[in-house]
Image (cartoon, rainbow, N blue to C red; front, side, top):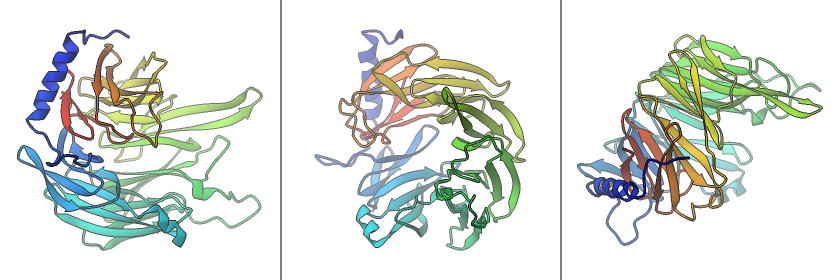
Amino acid sequence: MISVFRKFSIPVLLLITLARVGQSQILPAGDKPDPVRFWLSHQGEPWGYVTKEAVFLKEDSGYTYSRELKGITQAHLSPNGQLALLAEHEPYRSRLHQSLITRFRLIDHKGKEWLNWQESNAADETRWQAAVSITGVLALFDPGYAHLKLIASNGQIILDKKLIKPAPLTEHTPVFNLERKGRLGWVDEQVVVVLEEKAFQPKHADNILVMAFDSDGRITWETKLPLTQIQGALFDENGLFIAGYDWQDTDLGRDFRFQLIQIDVRSGERLQQWQRPAKQMTISPNGKWLAVLATADAGYRVALKNGDVNDFQLNSETDYFQHLVVNDEGDVLTLTVSKSNFHPLEIFKSNQIKLVKPFSGDVLELRTTGIGQDQLHLQTDGIKFYLGDTQRWREVGE
């Protein structure tokens, strides 16, 4: 891989970048400030962040303490980026009580709390998935039980529905349906649910159910897809992208057949499809480009106007792709980390990352501040690229 950030240009770019950051240093004063756990941002513009102990919101050129909030493990934004949904999980020790409680808090960029909602799961089950609409409607989804809830910001339950009726118990009834995978997302004022009807479906079948509901809980469309298992989903006003596969055992081993399908979010109609895997997807702010990580060291870019695909590869024995974004011109920026220093439950021990433009070969190496897997936040406003880590939000690239 050839880098255009030459020997002397790398220090210069880093100085420029850090100079920009210095104008809006964000962490609170103190010798050892708590690191950023999650960023709250939309299309390159941050408006807050969450630490292990509290929430901080942007004010003028800096960030100020908003409230104490411990144990936030997930942060989701509404489609327009104006509302943040924070999932607060109770400690692991509560499993002794055979139940797990998750508190969902909804706040805006001024710190106003719109909703404080609590749900529970049995200790051996997965937690509820969650998403929030632009008007503050909370959607909760349990794929195992095919259970969907919609809650208004005033706490009123709009919808409480099982999407699949339990099948009568027979000798052929699957016993692993609580392991079903599902995805949930809002597009404008419509929530879309993607669900496997049966878990671990081994043969080709129309096993993926897709349903859309409006914010009043009325179903707007429903369709099935010729996939047996879900790999991923991306929800955007320019399309719903669902990746999945089926498989069969042969004499040579297990044969996987991957598909990526684009669906019209207003009608449920299939628009385009590609016979490719998609473990992670992102779309440009103008909706013209889709960038996909297919594997840990390979990906591709799709021009959505005509469906053309361009592949890229990471030719490295030491690094792999973790994340990517694409701007309005179709320029892809990837975040790569070291295989030798990375484990999902540990920090990046070397604090070294690379930002790579795979189509041009541009590389920018950065040292960070001891970040975990989900503490790096790569984003674009359609033109420029931005990176958030545990200490700062910075503009990167040319």
